[in-house]
Image (cartoon, rainbow, N blue to C red):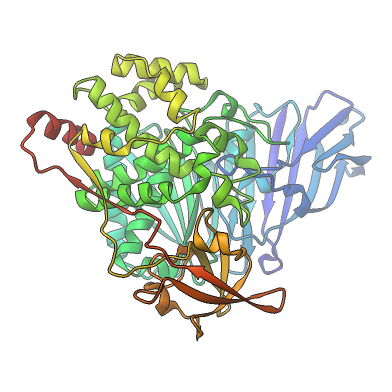
Length: 580
């Protein structure tokens, strides 16, 4: 049997893609085609079938009967005739790495949102032909047959290979004998030479940790978009990644380094989740949710390595890395939801919690990226201590890569504990019970002290008072996006969704927060002043007044530094953590 796809971009300004799939030698009377409901790496139902229109089937010029079985599956009565061609159009106007977007300037294709699959034949080799506007080029990790024709070993590889089509720039470099391409679309205002060198350094740092790079060629797709709705968002693939950046976010050094950590995160996924993955994610179904307790490891530990990679690539200093870890610990301890959700529970409920956060999420949920990052840091310290400085989390990742890449099988919690036992020489079941499966408070201070790192509270700024509000700015308005449980504003009755208009009788403005508002807790609000402040808000069009207590800041923030004591053992263990 032969399966061939066609992708046409004839009128890109309409946002429509012309798609067809031709099946030759199909042996059965009824053919079923399904459009995925989600895309791996982004654990939320997107129902891509909603963007499909005008689906029809034919064979040798004869129209075939076609009907819809459910929201994303079509049935075709083939009469055992061959070949069968199914044609349809896809509306693609969502400029995110998890979806597809086409306009007069380019086309970006995420395969799960464009290509239907033949039920029961996902393992079949497929070919893809692309028809593009004159002057546009194609960048993809798919194996090239000839100009505009590509091959994938199976459907899953087809849809795991995003495609950038347009007049984008291309940059290239080599590491470990492997070719790497950067497809750069949009308004990138920085230095191409610096970007090329920094991305190359990230790849080299990852190769030093993990060993041989598990691909022949790798593609980075970067979209630099003016006034993008978020600073950045990315999606990992086995041989490529696609990342959107808000162009302005790249223009200062601190934000640029954050972008480098995003690149590192998505790149490290080519090991952790694309090859080292929970059993449930090995051959995921595309029709409905695929549940796993392991996203804290697949996503959170990857986020830990995002920071390790840019440290070991020399793109940030040791103190910048420690500052980042301290900031994450501060954020974690500021999250009331950590008391109600474990890392495993957070992972399992990603489908209904993480991607569908509500105004009360901060009080009832903990981010598995955040907790997983910190568990990665803590796991490394535990392994270093247990092995007396001879092993670290790096050794665990290499061990699991060797085990699980060979036959493509996934790992269970039991497998992960076994690998930890092999690397550290100790049973970490109790550790898992408390911090991964349970909600015990993580003793950061003692764990970090064991490797010569000192975690300490930052001194409060003089007279600083806190309301416990999280604000976001929208159209010149300051809206309450969350109210932290147990804080003075929570007790006073201020609600998420309220518009904050005045504080202490003065029109509210960003200067009152100490820094520009961007989803932050107002820790620096009302320096000096009394023990209370009157806040005025609009709620449902009505002005309301609340008297809010202003206690000394209830949110403890932390600093992390290297110990100054002359302890050769701890210094060696700290070096193992930071340098590998």
